[in-house]
Image 1 (spheres, helix red, strand yellow):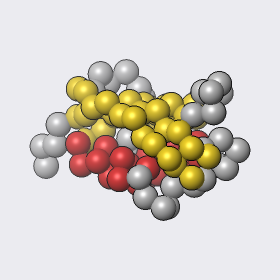
Image 2 (tube, rainbow, N blue to C red):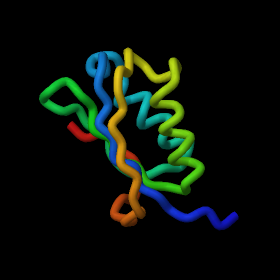
Image 3 (cartoon, rainbow, N blue to C red):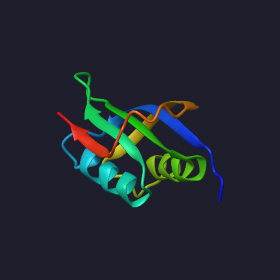
Image 4 (tube, rainbow, N blue to C red):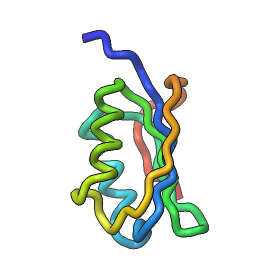
Length: 94
C-alpha cells in the first residue's frame, strides 16, 4: 500500500485538560502507528502534531471528533500538510 505521509497540526478546545485527553490521544496515535506530540496549552486547549499515512491521520481526526475522545471536545482547528519525518515516536510533552 503506497499511502503518502501526512501531517496534522491541531488545536483542540473544550474540556480537554485533566480528563486523560493527552494519554488517550497518545494511545490512539500509537495504535495507528502515528508519530508526533501532544501537549497542554496554557489557555486550556491541547496542541497535537501527528504524522503518518493519510488514512491513519484521517482515523485520528475522526476519533478526535467522536464521542470516544475523552472529556468534551468542542472544536478542532486543524491544518493538514506534508509530513516532515522529524518524529521517531509519539509522546506526551509537558
